[in-house]
Length: 588
Image (cartoon, rainbow, N blue to C red; front, side):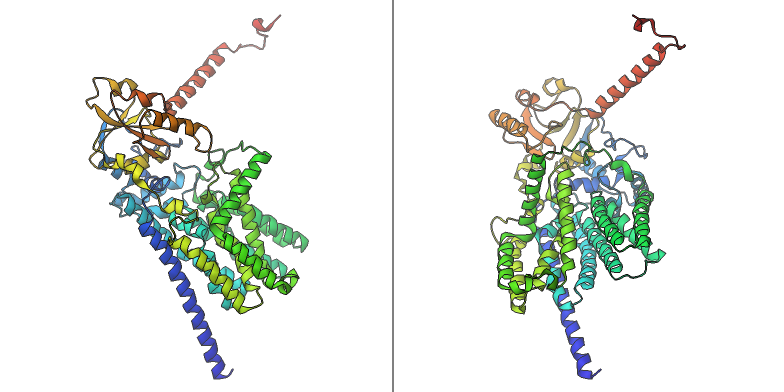
């Protein structure tokens, strides 16, 4: 090969690497920007910290089967806010092995496995600052680190499909600049981890699809094991991933059947069964999710629900991935380049549309079956869905058209990701930019705080309330409802923290009624958390909130029902005849 050709290839390769590094740096910068200015930790996010330190929360050190009884705060005992924060959030440096061992058996969050919590526990071993803003940044930095692996896997996937390196930098930018992909990093939960393995599962699918298409030999045992391991970590990153695995697997089985590849059919079935077995070995509580609130068995199937969720998911895609200008510009570009698109077979890299379509189908299924129609359940799939945009760009006849379309997509995305406009449309802002003014009464108050009625508080919601209390605050669980207004209560002013009704749902008509009651009783100055209300009251005004919220004592009720069943069982045994003779009372 002539020397000038070698130099040219080297220069082109260097340009590609520089562009890829610039894309990577920009994607990290956007996420770091929101990490610094995106608000405080809220909702499920404090739970990520508390559930990853089980040895702190469980006095006896054993793993309980029930979901919430991690740590039983004693009733009518006063705790300091700082003490509870250390119990809930500060990892004991010497208990890493113990924590990981306990989480291998079970986590007190049956809707999720131990994978993310295990990695997060290793990461946050030195945490000693319980400022909500710092904890948000601290968690996002972990997600930014994880996102680097997502970039690497996406690069390998795009390079395998596109073959031409010139399209990859722009394709990477589109994959990770969209608001849905950024959301995964902004929320201190397992969604960024899920994105890595969502892309990896798509990569495995693509390699096997091409292998069957090109009539290549069956993978050897080691490669099949690596596929099994990848799918195992995927499903451990989020249980909803199993639906995507089923969709990809069904597609590959159909492909194998059409190609008459019995060997691949057997291998795919083996990999599927193997990933479930391996998941059980890596997390002993793997099947605990079955029948939980996150996977309801009585999901109503009716046309209205299907339509409502379909429209909801379309809104997510519009706001977080494709955007209105993208759709308009895409239609315009396709019209002006109609010769290229009139024959689908003549367009390049049509395979890009298959994973994008399968990921979109997965998102519709998940939004339908999930108990809440939240974007965060499907946002890990947005880099793969963005491959539809990439397909359009690489198929435009003109390099100028490709550049203009890609540039306009990026320009439109930048205000959404960098908050250049006052009120961004992107849904991920919800995760990253909260107004915490309504939490100030609790965080800044020096009043004593009374947790109402629940002897065994759910750690999920309790951790959020604890995080937003003053370090010097006196916190007490009150089981006797008369205590609030009695002489035994030494404080005339105090804050009552109470659960909202169990069947609470902001989308139904009950929430506006509760809100109107609160407003009617002049109690606007209260904090509302995910599942909790915090009311500053006095002994005289306590009666205003007494009827608003139902009394909550889940485990006491469960224990009472269990005791009742046990008693009924004993009575049934006693009353059971010792012979097979008919019961006289049943004879006519």
